[in-house]
Image (cartoon, rainbow, N blue to C red):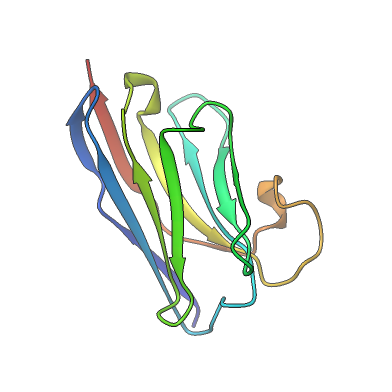
Length: 124
């Protein structure tokens, strides 16, 4: 059974930092793209960013320069370092992984495995 398990969420003041981690089990994703999405109440799920197996990264404009994705292929983990957090970053953050290279990486529908999510709350 494939599982993605996030950790590291919490409550932080605006301007603070948090680091989220996601550990995969049941299969390896070292050859696949892994990414982070977020969903705020009443809003659609949005892409935060992703990292390909080769290390290429993409970030949404809203987080560019503040968030950094890293991954350890040997351990099948991916992390999201979030700095200079803003109240509008408040959301449930979800780790996701692709099983294949089919479809655009920007589209959540093209991710096959999802974690349960971890809450990030940024207070003003």
